[in-house]
Figure (cartoon, rainbow, N blue to C red):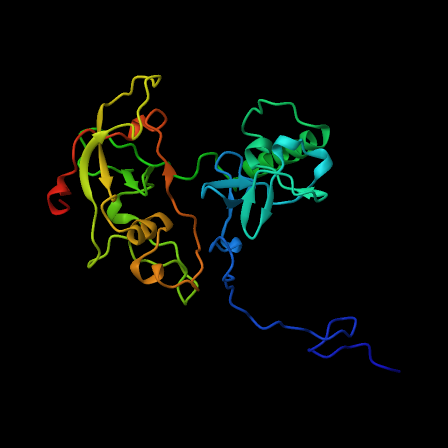
Length: 286
């Protein structure tokens, strides 16, 4: 009688164990983005379901539903496709497409009428949210929100930064903005953008709107504190925009582990973060 026991190097059906060699993820030289997709899966702060963040052609991050959907069940205005890691708000002609997570998020009321298939998918996401809430695995709003910067605070928690003829709202103080590149140990670079030896920007009081028009509504503040990087060379401003330290700014082979945390500044939407007084550290940056 032949024994049915298999060796340690084989499965129960006799097929051999295959252990693939661990390979490091790399970014192609012709890729329009250096962001690694494996690091961009996150949980929605409102419903707890998984979302996948992608950058768009305008460098703005957008959360997409992690799975592809048949194009026939998604309305044309809601179709997205991903090419080389970049999300495009258009139909690429394939039978599959992507859809943004806010369209399906059960924690929000959708302003539009969904198709029956999308409505069923939204109900399944709502059931998953209820299951996470019942088991205690998720609490709505568990991710900490950024602190607001009062006008009398000398160090804005979310400063307004001007670079490349545009203004952005930073996610953290200027001195704490961290590089998003990956190190050789596959961890995020711990170095800040404002390192010794680099030319810093300067704090200045400037109008709240960069390009003012006659039809614009009244703003809560006329002049606000802005961290101006406009006088720096283009390469230095680009380094800040891509959120890389001086070392990784010259290393094209190092991928990014996180999205750049810049948010296009809107004085009406971000009025809670406007500071009308220059920070106390202004003297060392002027």
